[in-house]
Length: 489
Image (tube, rainbow, N blue to C red; front, side, top):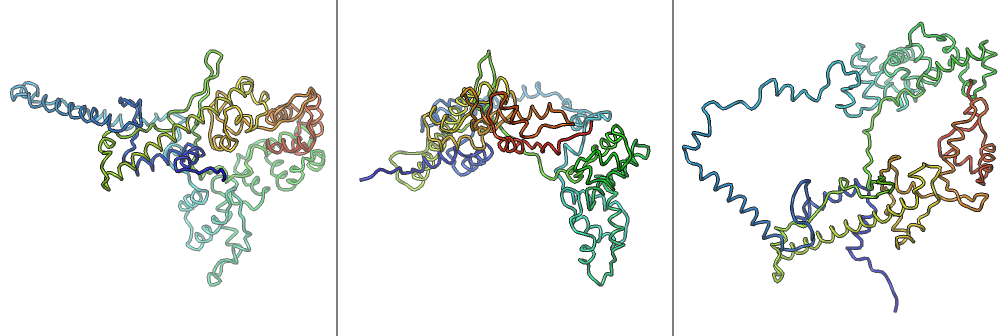
């Protein structure tokens, strides 16, 4: 004798739908609509009785009769018109629906006027292009010999997405056919022509050369141009280590003068290739919408994210209960699968609603005050509140997003570990990260806060955090160490 849990196909389907993201769920629904004739989508504004989506043939007759009635009424109206009525109703000269000017204005209505400076045609009409295709397009506009064009194509293929030349010129030169007799000077000359392409600084072999190429394309009367060129050419290492005293001594500049030179260098782009976005933007569709109404936080599902489904009443009416033919068996099975699918969707929505409601109930402080008011929360807390297993809560919160007045967050964002406070309470790691970010933003840039100093400031607020924990949180926020955050004021 023993107990075991048997996963029925219906339970397996419900669990699989539960862990799908919104985009994957929409694809799953589309596949179900295409494979199961019993399922149909409810369009917006469609008026029908959908109180019981699991109904069989009860709805089929009224729906068919309504369809037939509307058709008969339309036919009767047309047949009752006599020929005299047609002559009186239709004039000899029919008015034109639209003029050419109207059609032209309609087709061009989406285009802005010529004086619209904020409109960019390429960003609205063109798909994302790669850096190589962008450079090849510019190459086709430059007249050059076939050999130079072949060298240019090879050089462009060697440029990485950041805009730098990955292979050395010697390696590129050795890769050509020896019969072509291509020398290193030819490759270097073609590279100089590519380095004049957009974006500025493309095709450089080092960071200093990249910045120098961008400086050379600035107007000649740019202030501190010569000093900036010397800085990126000879003292780029000292600039990276932020040894400002050594820079002032070697370049013979005062502190205010060096600051202006560094500001000019910092206005350049160290990764010019990143300006060309090759991938299409990915949009996040929230599953849950949270809004405040009369000092109360309301949670509701995003109805536009998941289409509403129902059983096709007309097809369901064709199923005969006592018939055992192959066609009737197929339709009965399709009807049962449609019911299961709709029920699994309803179960997914109910579970998601329960979990989201408990998260909002627990994290009201975050919604009102921000990250610093985030409370510690683990999967066990929500699982205990809704009466489900932690694995179910993990599936619900994965790749599900919540739209709040503070932005769109994944449901897992609201879960965080806790750190003990001096008063015996708990503080979430998310709140500690927010405090660290706030302290760094308000620090003296001449003397940035070290990890030990930040740990001391947190301890003064009653939060006991070790230095290595502060370093881990700082790195997760993308904040550089104190030695790299030092600025010359």
